[in-house]
Length: 355
Image (cartoon, rainbow, N blue to C red):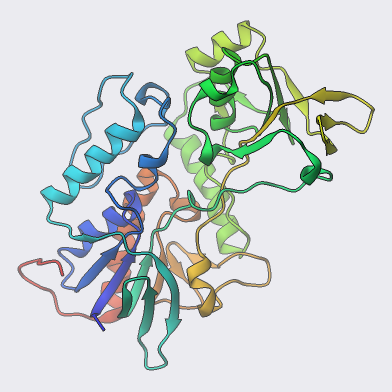
């Protein structure tokens, strides 16, 4: 049974940032990742997502990200950057290793159970993100729909929607991006959201970013499910969306009340026939493997002070809640390592050698 000071679960931006800072912490550590290759969730993004339309990418610590051509697929550019980062700093990621459960060993240690065996560790940094937990809300009649239902996570490009009547559900960036793509080939598109979308004309500023992060942070500190950084903000008027507005594609309808075999219906009797319902309804944190530790509070979330879980300071959540952004994950990785080093009172390693 391998033993170490810290296990990092996940090797996306949050996990790699944490590993970078662990290298010089004096702590032994292991990085476990369920994917077969570097790149975190980026390697699973739809092929038509280009660098020109992704949200701003913040550098991993110690390595500048040189923006590739705007038309390069994000699912190629970002994984290549992550792989270069792992090689440059000698970060050994053990993959594919799927963590199935984390338990208290009863002697101050944690047991990290995986499909490749069990690790014993003094602390854990969880950086599993949300991509593996797509969320689809339930609406009456959903099981009767004769067409196809899929989530953003399973979208592979607009071609499969050619000639189809498509209902796109969701008010976030992914929803409007996919709506615009699909509209070029679909017989019709209908956009529905629970709340009227908010578009922002002025540029996003650091002050606005801090306000959004503070909103999510307040939820986490109160023990509520965090929501997402994106949902707490607004949609930016990109050139692509301005063109879509001129084409009449961004006509939003309120959320339907039920699903019927051939489409969706509203309470006022309005109806929309559909062949496909595309749920762009976000994700939930991938934390099921932490369930044996009973970290969730009565309000449905895990109370955290920064990245540290209040109920168990051995556990840090990086890339969760207020740190669920590229810049936030970097800062959170550094903060988590600093706190764990103090907690474990490990002597500094003058060589900064990683486990």
